[in-house]
Amino acid sequence: MVAAIVLLVPKFHCAAHKQACKLKYSYQYTPGVGQTDGEGCARVWAGMKANASSLKEMGPGSHHDTMDDLCSYWNRAKH
Image 1 (cartoon, one colour):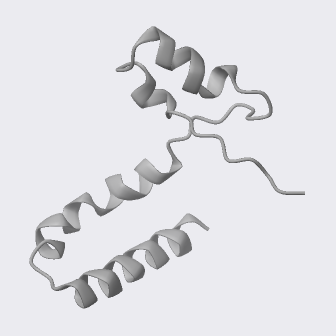
Image 2: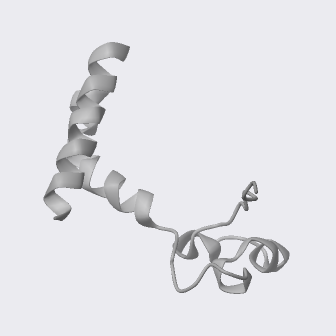
């Protein structure tokens, strides 16, 4: 059985959308979603904001490696 992919707008961002979009893409009206807000990815980016000025100066390889290190650190720090 293949799971369907459902595109939704995270709750914090939903307020900026039109009513028709809110009804179609809201976590609140989607069966099986539960009480999530969909903002998990944004929390990681908020923690990395301080590194933005350094990251924009890096080449693609260094940028990728540094982002990988930052994400790994974020995951370890959660526990």
